[in-house]
Image (cartoon, rainbow, N blue to C red):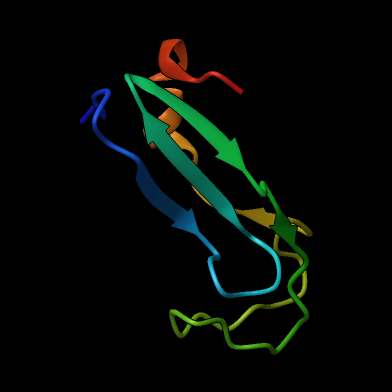
Length: 78
C-alpha cells in the first residue's frame, strides 16, 4: 500500500475526531507524513469507544497502534 505521484491519501490510524490517541498519516508520491500523534490518559471506570472499561493498574498512557507506519519506516518523510 503505497501512494503514487497522483495520490493524496489520508489514513487515520486512531483517534480521529476524538480527544487524544490521534495518529494520522498523509500519503503522496511514495512517502508518508505522520501528523497529530497523540496519547490519552484513561480514567478508571471510563468506557472507551470500543466498549473497554478501564481499571486501576492499567497502563497510564494509551496511544494508537503505529504498526502500519513502523513497517514502512523507510517511506516516512516526517
